[in-house]
Image (cartoon, rainbow, N blue to C red; front, side, top):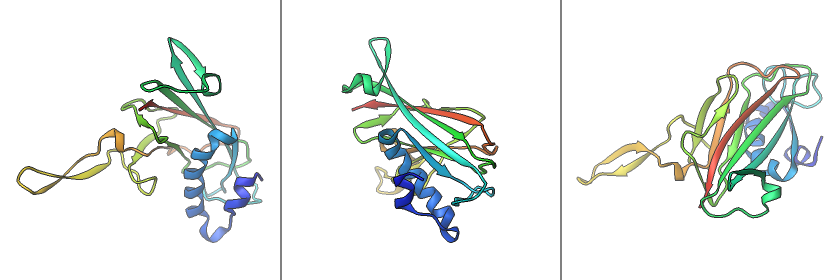
Length: 187
């Protein structure tokens, strides 16, 4: 178990809430840590010490600079208006299925989500958050004041997006790998 898992901790009574919290925090920290282990039980809930799934997540970023794609490590510094492609690779190295598997990608501060750039294997449902990952929707909505003073619900602009979540109905089987990606533009 790595330091991040020890810090968060696991217990069966609040496993689902912790799973959501872990996935949300992992996406932010995974860029620094490289590969992070995520545990999920046979029923899709987090657990420790079970013979269930063990999902390892790797987040990597690529920048397209002058027609050449290079890793963020190679690029060292990103410039305004450059497009970064984030790839989330999830591999189940455990013995059981990870049911209701979700992967969450953070839209880093100083960047804006590129509308329509999401891509995922196995027909993932894609949802977005505008509140730091507290809630997700296919099309987040906000209230907007109209000229007559009334309030109307309208789609949130993509510059308000804080996370993108990929949800798979099909379980992530043992030794199976799934890839999801999305792009952001540097402000």
